[in-house]
Length: 473
Image (tube, rainbow, N blue to C red; front, side, top):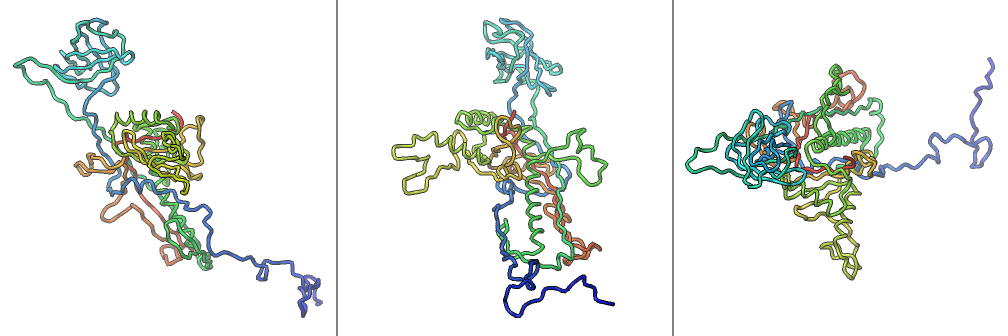
């Protein structure tokens, strides 16, 4: 049988380096002088890509062996009712005051105590002595000290608080006693997982890449580079989940996933959720003037009055604070001089501040999580934005709470993480390898799988001392 013309013979190389039509090569996909030069070192065009650091700076991690974390926080020492009404008309010498505040089951007012009663709208007020108390109906009788009687109308909404007591000589003691009022809070740990997988075939083809990692290590990695990035991403999720977690509301799509054997359905109370719910919220974006901060300080005066506080801010908020503080300086006659800085003409001008004192000490710290465009840094800002967080004020130090698991008072940081652990199982940060490649021999899967798991929740103690800065009411 004759040789077929197709496929034909290939190019004929010439004996000399002479460009001919027979030795011209048009395919450069294999080894030749036109192969690209490759850099073995990876270029870090986004710098440090991790966002975790916040909880490491302000919190701590503690073990727990329960599916529920519960603690008690002290209530107010003094009681004030802000939704009361009077049965009497103006100028009356006595009245029956009814307490209408929500969630009041028994008023903390007793016979012989002296009370201050004021009109919420006008500020008109009286002082009186309690002559009788009907705890079941949340009412008490009061006799006014003023000769002109009741100064406000019978339709006014009133505030009442106790300022002392008065008794006659030789009388018995105070009738009844008061118990300290605690508020109880709880949170549930959630299970966070991740996984990296590489097939056995890919593991057999080694390609080394020199890297500088976010945790400061340098060296050469091959397929484990992606495993390393999965680990870094998982560590970020350990923090961002504690910041962003919300409980599944009754009837929500997440709460109805009880039949799904894979995904969770309860959620958890993250820091933003807790501060939004029972903390302080500045809804105007960034406070930019001392008057704005004065209103925040006034609120802190009504809370725990923590002396030192750290404000974790995004870049725009940081600049706004710098500009606000710089505006307090007269600039002098020889150029800009901010605060304690000695900014002369021969040095780099320092236009930033790390903190200030106005009633309390406020320290400023940039929060990368709020600047990263792949996280909250990509959210809209301005008056039309709703819910975009620009900063968080965190009180420094620790507080005393009653730990119901330990059964005693304990000193805890205002922010701390509780993870599930026992003598035989530590779920703070678990990692293990499965499959049949890379040294693992646990299954017939022709791959190596690196698994990550943690079970944890964040406890936000004294949320009334935190301030969340965001857009929207």
